[in-house]
Length: 268
Image 1: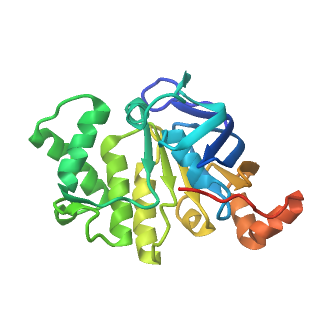
Image 2 (image 1 turned 90 degrees about the vertical axis):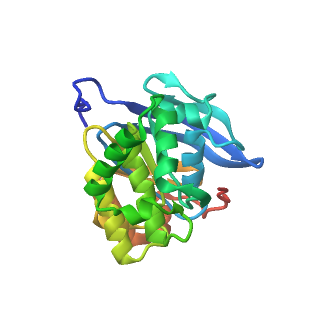
């Protein structure tokens, strides 16, 4: 794919993972990941349980306890391997978690305003922020009732994932990692979440969409699809690769590539 601008006339932001090896609780999980995602591109990362997909997302965002033993994570030409998660977020990275956490006593709107001011390093009045947030809510079809509730408390699976998409819209990162955004969703919730992601995809946003199943890609068409097994990316291709996976299953792809069965245990 030829390099394009990000909509502002400048070169697109770029996330580069080079020869990444990582351990969790002294278990080797990642075994040499090479991956590049640019602003404006949508990449799907697929793989069976235990392949290391969620571990990769946590390593990229710098979650404590995930130890890089070799390789690097480069964002916009800067090695961010030693940066804390909040520093990476300030640079323009975002992670939508597979299992969003409840925050009792803190409303969604107050949580997002605090997050916005921390990431953007700018102070907005309550009125100015509410206007910005309302614009994104209208864009995604989210009503006031949800943002006045406590963060994820009593939320359905679909509401939790839509709340993550709203955070993505409000914070406006350059590159977003969506970790199993389709996990636990029924078909109606899946469509709503996918519609929200599609609304945000464009020149200003690069997406790494992590999923087990092809069904999410019925609604979000990736530029590239990567298959991960045993802590490595073993195959990459266009959107048709996801359909091949649907037909053959991971076992079929594994046999085609002459790989052994998974033995890695994914942590986190």
